[in-house]
Length: 116
Image 1 (cartoon, rainbow, N blue to C red):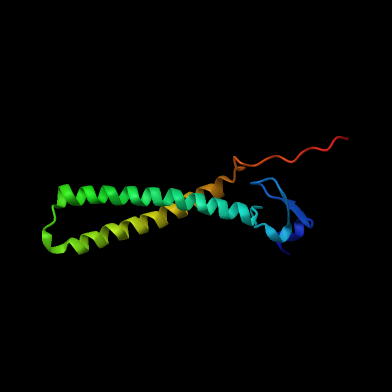
Image 2: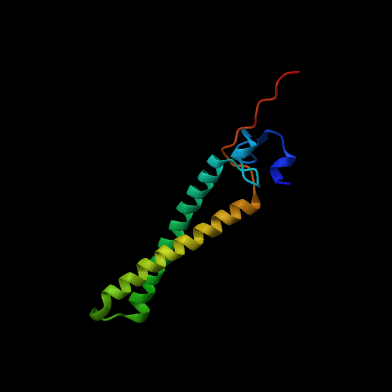
């Protein structure tokens, strides 16, 4: 028995509040477009964190380590790797937090209630 068996043919996405086919949502009832929007949002936030961390690393290298002219390529590769790894880690954290909190999206429009 699958979780989809408990629902009918259509289910409401908990993020955008649109009625979708059951095959178009995941187990947390998020549709594909909401998942893509959340991933894009997490990616942008992740890059902000990754680049900020890399800039802090550059400042630390410049003032605390005081590198010589010998290994600039190694320091540059370290900073680029720190930015990339930091962005990836932060992206996963932001996406995970958004999924765990499972709040409705700010851009969601509740469906109109038909007059009875």
